[in-house]
Image 1 (cartoon, rainbow, N blue to C red):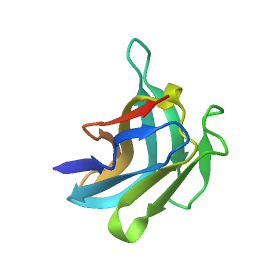
Image 2 (image 1 turned 180 degrees about the vertical axis):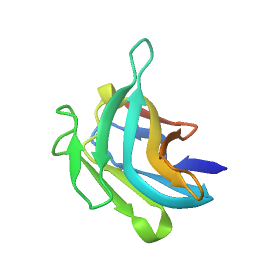
Image 3 (image 1 turned 120 degrees about the vertical axis):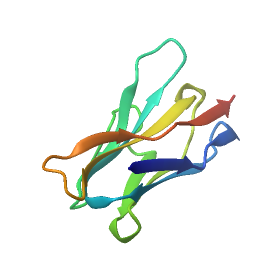
Length: 121
């Protein structure tokens, strides 16, 4: 089995910062791309940022210049540093990873349980 466990969410005032972490564990052979998604009430889940195993990253336009995604391959962990938070960043943030399990032929998508980020004005 593979698990993704997120941490770091919470309540912060506008302009503040938070750092999310997501650690993958289990019978992992290799982790390909990792990313962060978010879902606000009444809205569809959207990609916030993604990062390849080689470290190339991409961002949603709405967070460009404020959020930074990074990963520690030795720890199977991905991070999201969020600066300059705005009320519209309020959402549940989900970690996603494409993981090839030991003994599997193809990678599968895995999701974390989600962590709430609330930004007050």
